Amino acid sequence: MKLIVGITGASGAKLGLKFVSLLPKDIETFVVLSDSAKIALQCEENIDFTQQTNEYMVYNDNDISAPIASGSFGCDSMIILPCSMNTLAKCSVGISDTLITRSFSVMLKEKKKTILAPREMPYSSIALENMLKLSNLGVIIAPPMLGYYSNQQSLDDMENFIIGKWFDLLGIENNLYKRWKSEQ
Image (cartoon, rainbow, N blue to C red; front, side, top):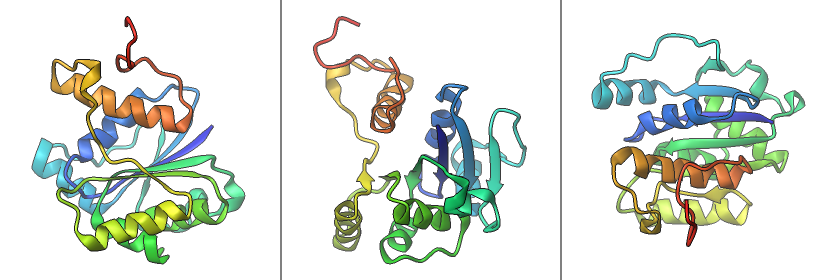
């Protein structure tokens, strides 16, 4: 599987990094952090994200010549988490002025599985309309929401539940959370 992970400047950008760190190593992963995501990581977590990694490819959001900007590269799915309201709005009207939004446009036209994880509360009527429009186009809208049946005991447990649900949507096997009525 070739997976694009877009991390935008909404609060909780660290959750995007944790998502990537928990991915199975056999998934070819392409990560794009927006400039705003880097600012959010610095402000919220004191993380200065400037390094490359050997585990996955990291692209600059302004690199629209990256392979993932073309349908011929053949990515299978994409998730944008967290998805800022700015990115959500751009996606809903077809603005593809960054690598994240260009990759999203490619996934949409290729009819590939695409998930947006909007991180905002409450949602404005405009954001809800944008989500409905995208959902009607086949985009999965999956904000980071808790399900209390898995009996989370810590922030780490809560994050694992949310990431496990996203993995489920992408068809990635996991045991990151206790499933409904399971003995795990």
